[in-house]
Length: 336
Image (cartoon, rainbow, N blue to C red; front, side):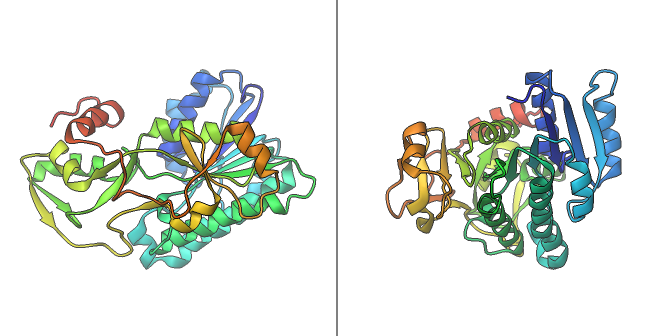
């Protein structure tokens, strides 16, 4: 799929960007070029040590900010596929710095769309979050807006064959700023702070996130929001898995935080289809034949009123499974 192609990853020095880079070089050694675009020169410098050009001649590091459309147009020249991973993602920081979050997550999304339309890009996959579903915080609201922009971009492309799609998932295990590495580092103090004892979250590994992006790139018809079928965990089970001897300090809900996260609301159910491994929310005004889509993917419309919530999920991680996953995906030296 990607061999002989040029791929660009915005926010390419982040956790998922680095996981995508590793996956692409391992599985598509004959790519033409892989461009890592980010605004952090230090992270680019560090990543360049991991991918020296004498071993990875196709890699390029491109400094730029998605807020700068002119720079995006320059970066997208000759690019076939764009994976849009750049975002401001910390909920409490977005609450206190709304302008900055809007500029990156909404303005940046629009710049990526316009630059892709102007430069001959074939396929754009944008990364989203469960916080974009029925958002109560500014970060979620900006990502919902971003999702809507990417879905609607399929309606303004004219005769351009480009496809825009979105992948939405929950907490990525071990990603920058996520709870598991935070708890691992914090446990030496003997006390772990949690905001609410009843809190739950969806859980996905970096590799599963990568696989989902690859699925969207290969199978999207344009306008889909892909959602994985993944387990939830209880925050108290994460504490037990990582530091069973630590005390728990309940510090209260942070600004913009939910007790449970959602990925599909009951209102989405009228446009949501079960694809087997994934769900997909189709656009309310699709540019393709729904019946052909259903037949091609054996897609089944979910029941009216169906919702997908981390608090009433049917699949759950246990303390034991969390320990195994932490050792596999976060820290190979981990011991509880």
